[in-house]
Amino acid sequence: MINNQTKINGFILSSVSLGFNTFACLISCIVFLIIVYHLYYNHVKREDKITVVLCSHIYLTILIYAPLLSSMNIRSILGDLYNQSFDSSWCIFSGYLSLVMTFMLYMTFVNQAFYRLIRVVYSQNRRLQSLKLYIILPIIEIIIITPILLCVLLPLNGVTYLPNDYFCNPTFTNIPGILSTAVIVYICPFCCILFIYIRITRFIHQQGNIQILVIKQRQSRDLLIIRRILIIVNLLLILGIPGMVFIFMFIITGEENPLLARIASFPVSVSEAGLSVALLFSIPQLKNIVLNLRIIKTVTPVNQIVRGTVQM
View (cartoon, rainbow, N blue to C red):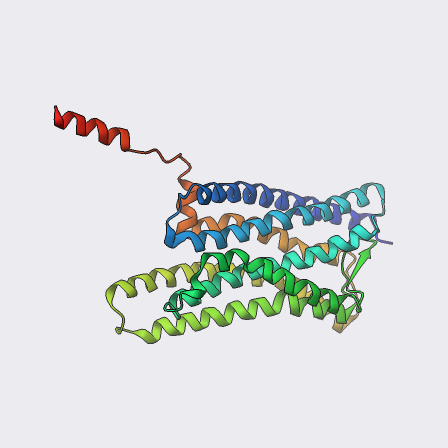
């Protein structure tokens, strides 16, 4: 049993997390709808469409992930207030689904890095610069990762009901399960992102003065965007560190904080809210779309008036 002060701290932590998740959900919904509108009515330049589609994947992932985390926060709040149990098959399912969405959130940045790699290093390969490829890529990744994640975690009983937190999540006492989750969901995607951006940066610096001015200018813009995205990726890394620290602390000391799951998930809620705003200022194509909310009006009537005046 946990004491009253711990319950109060847990209630506050869950309430603040719920606020961040709600904010992330609202911002992601608005931005995603704006992106879909501009893509549907062809208000996006052809050369920018892949970048915008990749951004839409990030916001769609947050739009799905944030309500999942919010439901966990609501269960924790209701559990703290009324000591209500939420142990069910749906709870276990939502726990595994949240892990899949965590992985997909990182993979959206992997896909973005991969596109930058093809655009800068392998610009002659047109097949890997197809819009259709990047539209279906998240679907392919979900089909691949879900069986792998389930095959690894189900035998290890990776997701269980946490009676002190009132939701289902990997427990830190299950060392094989939590380490397997960390490697698949967190470490592998981040290593892919890091490797790709290192490859791009080295390639650009190795070119020196070989490239013509137009290509050098485009690569300079890409490098600037990459630096901005890397700041966001580093934010994701930093916000994932508390959970990893708690894992190793538990392995060394054998003592588990009763609010460990809530403390570890809190940075995830903060990162979602931060990402939903930070991306708007990091990617120029997305910033231009969102800030230019006025309906694009045709200038044909004006041209016709001018021509008519000239003829008279």
